[in-house]
Length: 340
Ligand SMILES: Nc1ncnc2[nH]cnc12
Ligand SMILES: [Zn+2]
Image (cartoon, rainbow, N blue to C red; front, side, top):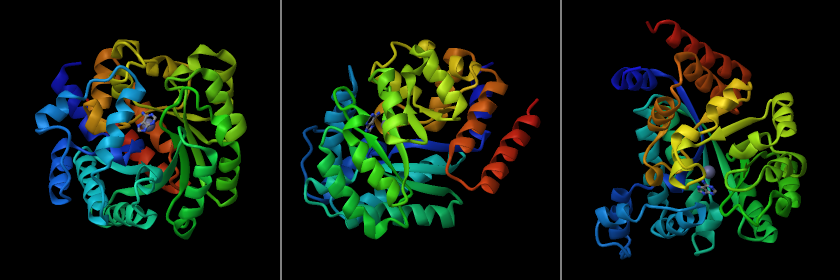
């Protein structure tokens, strides 16, 4: 398919984003603006030199910069501006539902209170619901390089807001921090009514995906690229209809795969897995939802029916009500039926 035709099709698809770290949507321009008003001097003297640093060999190299960038966020207004910038951007890409991660510990560990972080993000999400017609769910992620005890403290801090936080996740440095390290806090989170997801099998092995399912009891796997290494695991994911929230541009940027042509998403769709596409940390990895769809479709030569399946899968895997899922899935089907 010709590039401009493909881009036009992707733009028009009603989309759901289920794997997005709000701190990873912090564009350098906004980072400099907020740093200035908070009297913080960044280690980079220009937006261009900061962007120049966005070259990573692995997840950890990215995380080191991501945590430094997040230090600029101090006030509720900063978290609000960050979230609003993301929401207006994805609105322009016809994203109609988002499930957004935030990392409380990245902020509380440097003295920012949970309520400052939560309120800024929450107010922007509510405004987007009203004004942009974007529905949302909010997911609090535990940082896996920290201890389970610290995750318990975060769970405790979240309780006054639990009616507004829909799920918990697990992110940060995967290797050496297996899901099993967080079994108890995930159980406690489920007892509080949170839905459960976890990053697994991004850099880590397929055994981490098994652990996320068996020990954490997650309902979705974030990334899960490595599942194809293990046939029994694929069977399990199929049987239990566990979706994988894949992030192709992230995978290339972090060298989880060497080039987009090697991305497993097409093979996953062939096997009937609920594979979905998202942006992860769009400000760092070169694109939001449309760019992820486009680069993947181009490299793997995806056809219209595969694109439609990806969009449907995301609504299917979302935490929307059954009625809202059906509504969006019908919109996707109708959109594709009208394409020539
Ligand atoms: N891709 C990713 N993997 C693990 N932790 C993250 N935090 C932000 N982005 C992440
Ligand atoms: Zn992620």
